[in-house]
Length: 223
Image (cartoon, rainbow, N blue to C red):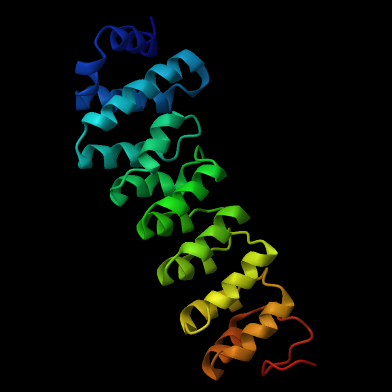
């Protein structure tokens, strides 16, 4: 009997006591990390159920450790990951919000719409953001979230999302500079942004940006 089979057997027999044991919790996460090729639906389900019990019984420190450990796994149990992502303690939610590949776009949008600015900031730091998520961050994020998502090269924006991003950057030199340096910013919006920022910010953007559209000259005007 494999280690995972033994876990499944004993967990079904005594779920409550197993979920309260930190040692068992760590062992199960290690099994998950080292047994990717032999996990069937039933075994993943048992692990998911066990870890969800741990979420109910564990203290904050234990949940943070669980979130950090599970965040990189492609095969991490989805219910556990989603519970961690929606956890009210941002220290618990942050690791999976920033990097878990298990969280779907729809779930991320739901988190952006319902959770704290700390949760939004964590989401804004993901390596890739679909337009639905990035647009929602622009609509609902505070200045720290806006600065983060504007500077995230892996964030995709819809046409309306870019318009909202440029609008949201008005009045903040730091955010406007991040927006102006985006390689995917449409030329018309880049021109509009340059016309509204201070001379100092305009100069920094034109100095640092390597793909300035041909219709814009070195002082920010239109040829």
